[in-house]
Each structure stands twice: as structure tokens, then as C-alpha cells.
Amino acid sequence: MIISVASGKGGTGKTTVAVNLALSLAENSLAVRFLDCDVEEPDAHIFLKPKIELTKQVGIPVPEIDESKCSYCGKCSEVCEFNAIVVINPAKDSKEKNSSTASREVKKKVLTFYELCHGCGGCSLFCPQEAITEVDREIGVVEGGKSRGIDFFQGRLNIGEPMAVPLIRKVKQYADNNKITIIDVSPGTSCPVVESVRKSDFCILVTEPTPFGLNDLKLAVEVLRKLKIPFGLVLNQFDIGDEKVYNYCNEEKVPLLLKIPFDKRIAVAYSKGIPLVKELPEYKEKFWGLYKRIRKESQIE
Image 1 (cartoon, rainbow, N blue to C red):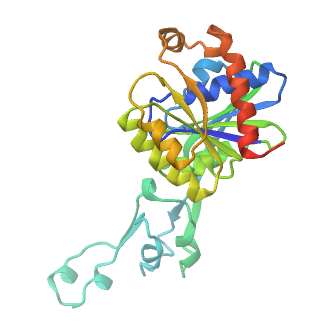
Image 2 (spheres, helix red, strand yellow; image 1 turned 30 degrees about the horizontal axis):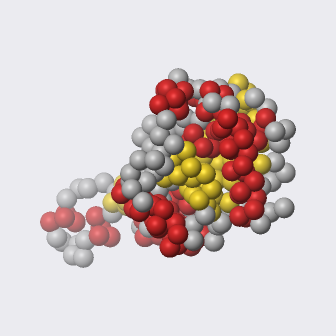
Image 3 (cartoon, rainbow, N blue to C red; image 1 turned 180 degrees about the vertical axis):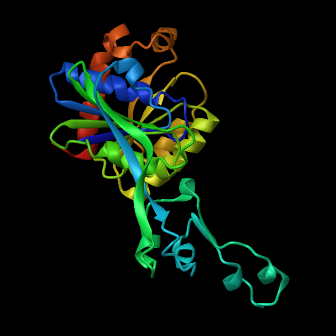
């Protein structure tokens, strides 16, 4: 079973829920695998403290141009919808051979912008001169290890890299349907979130009863309904804010799976990197109950 934990906005307690659910299941002798797919800011390791045994470099294929073969026809630039290749060919670009642009001695050149490349391979496929080969460009790493009986994997995107999705896909390759796989998803509703929750059996949405929490919850609900993934809500700090989140859940028939109060003890434990179920043992049963609700809502026996 694959359970993803997501939120429309950051700071709602998503990682707290994911980590403590994993620990509660492991302590009930279930086989658990934890994937931290928030590859731009992975932080579940702070609480699980795994012993890292695996480090694997991850790259995406980018074009390498052999300009000795290149005819500067511009086919590669035409096929690239991400503008990752620009072909400079004054003779081709100029409509009049005797124009001032054409008369200048501007060298023909192919410029590649690797940060824009999505690694689709279209440029090499359409190159009539076979002047383009693909080489790997490192974008991050996947790390794996063990923590308190939990198989742990996380992705770390290199600083400045714009595309998280290829690295998320690599992390998700370690999902195991024979175990309970819990995926900690990045906040928001953009492409990394869609890739992280895709093919989940169930998604836990975490929010708080505030105007911002409600607004972003609506966006997340819309995404999951489009993807046809069953979901339910964990309401963190439920005793602050107003009733609008409750009203929305009633109107949209969003199941409320668990409520966590605004509690200074939780904040203190979090600031020390101590999981909630370790600092406040009564939450072990609550997160075990959350898992049973998920089984019921997802109709998995």
C-alpha cells in the first residue's frame, strides 16, 4: 500500500504526520518504507535519523553537440519546446543575403542551456546530421538507509537545479507495494506534487483551520480529484482559527481522519527533532487509528 502525505501549503505539519505514522506502524510490527520526495528541502531525516548506507548520483540526459558534423540547420532548436538549444546561423536567419546582418562575420554557433533541458531526447532524434549525443548531467542524489525498522530513502536536489521531477521519479522507484510505503510530498500543487502522489493508494492532506490553509486545501483537493486518488484530511492545530475548514469538509464530503491540537509540548519536541510518538506516547494509538481509518476509506482490506 502506498500512502502519500501532502499539503496545499508549507508549514502545516505534513512531515510530522508522515514521520509519526511511519513510526507508529513500525512499532506495530508492520513493514514500512519511507520516501522523502520533498527533494528541494528534505527534512524527515531530522526525526528518523537513519543510518545512510546508499548514495546514488542522479542525472538527466542533455545534448552534447559535435559542431564538426553540425550543419546549423536549426532542427534541434525547432523541436525543443523548452528553448534549451539556440542555433546561431546568420545566413539562414537573414532573409536578404546582402543585409547588414548577413554581411557581418558572425560565427555559426549552437548554444545549449542545460538548466532548461528536460532530457526528452527530441533534439538528437531529429538531428539529420546525427551531430547530437546525450550525456548525463547530475541534478542530485538519492540516499537510502535504515531507521528504527523503517526502510528510508530520500532525494536531495542540487542547489540551483530548477527541475525536481526527474529526481522524484528516481526516489519513487524504491516504493514497495509489499510494504506500507509512506511518501512525504513537497508542499503546493505543482508538478513535483503531482509526480509524488501519482499512483498512491491514498493521500493524507494536512492543513490548519486558517484562511490560507483552507485556500490551499481546496487546490490540493482539486488536484487529487483530477488524479482520482482517495484522500482524507488531518487537521493540525485544530483548536485555532475558525470553522470554515470544517464547513468545507462537510460540504465537499472530505473525511476528517485525525485532529491534532495546538500544543506547546508538540512544538518543543519538534524543535528538538524528537518524533511526536516518542515524546507523547498517547499519540501512538492515535496514529494507529489514523492508519485504520485510511484502510477503511481506501477500501483496502
